[in-house]
Image (cartoon, rainbow, N blue to C red; front, side, top):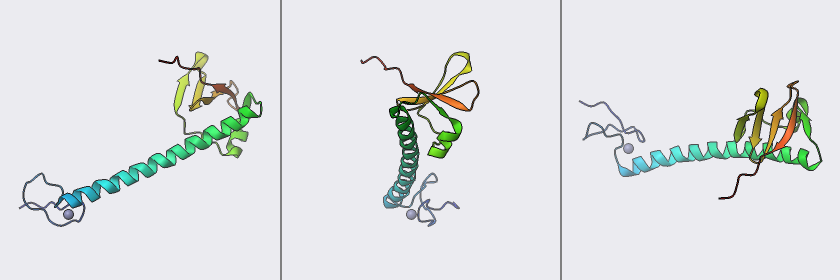
Amino acid sequence: MRKNNCKECKEPLTGRIDKKFCSDSCRCSFFNKLNVKERNEFRRINRILKQNRKILKRLVDSGRAKASLEELEIMGFAFGFATEVVVANEGQVKYFCYDIGLKTEADSLHFALVHKEQMPQS
Ligand SMILES: [Zn+2]
């Protein structure tokens, strides 16, 4: 006897041993919920990245070349989120949020604001 239940409605399954859902509608609703979860997670991360980029843009627009760790934290910069991480010369790291990034300074309390080099148009 099989002991598997539908992954959606939890009803006992009959028929093929590798069956995971009792019906097409259960299969659809299971994967729809999964997609919603995924979409929400994408949205959450995209929001954080856009917010980070906005903070960097604000600094660049006000003519700044550097920013301190403390100041970035106060502005709400989320350090764990970047679109690209580039290890440059002498172990310097650049953390990009789209086209604008932060480059670590030797004292590790400050960052230089950097722009991404333009990629050649194809
Ligand atoms: Zn079901």
